[in-house]
Figure 1 (spheres, rainbow, N blue to C red):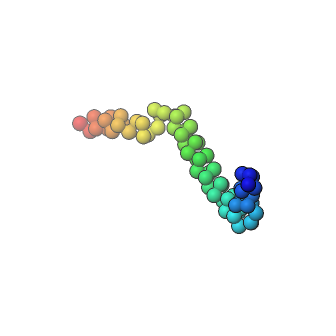
Figure 2: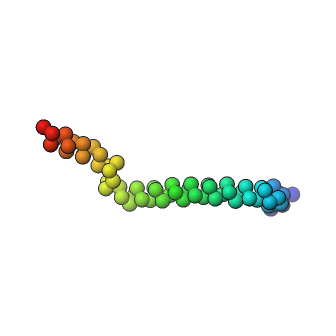
Figure 3: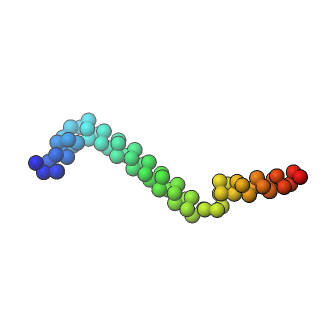
Length: 66
């Protein structure tokens, strides 16, 4: 049996499995797209975000209190 026939019988033949495949695929795609977008944003803004400057800000505030 060919791969296409196996996939058809396992996924596309019944509406319920086809709908489940669409939902799982959409969740997987959304998660990957979100991670890619966050990674790209963090790469472009590296060194400009609070998480990168937290120690410098804390040292500056500690120096002002003295």
